[in-house]
Length: 159
Image (cartoon, rainbow, N blue to C red):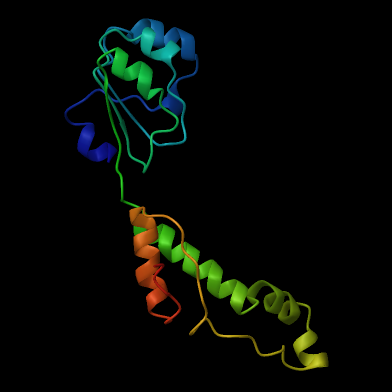
């Protein structure tokens, strides 16, 4: 992303700022945009120091780390990238369900401890096929999870 932005904008990576307060004082009138991950914290105090700030763009699903109410009061646009991780959230949930149903962590420890050789194969585990999975919520991540679970024939729609 930096490769796309740097030819058109003066970019400073927050990791390269050695003295936060001095930097923001020196650059206060020049900063018109902040691009960030969802892991930082953008407070009202910082926005107050940046009179030229027009937009805060978070390339993450949410914007919990941005004081969006304060931004709106100051006329600062806040954007984010909703839905970009829906499939990954769903895939991770399915991966964890499979790991639990197949006792993956327990069986991995069994194998690494050498028990396979002295005690024999680990017990057989249950399949996800046909199991009932309750899904609560209507977000797009939940919708994506529902499609993934369908491949195991384990979803019954709520009435």
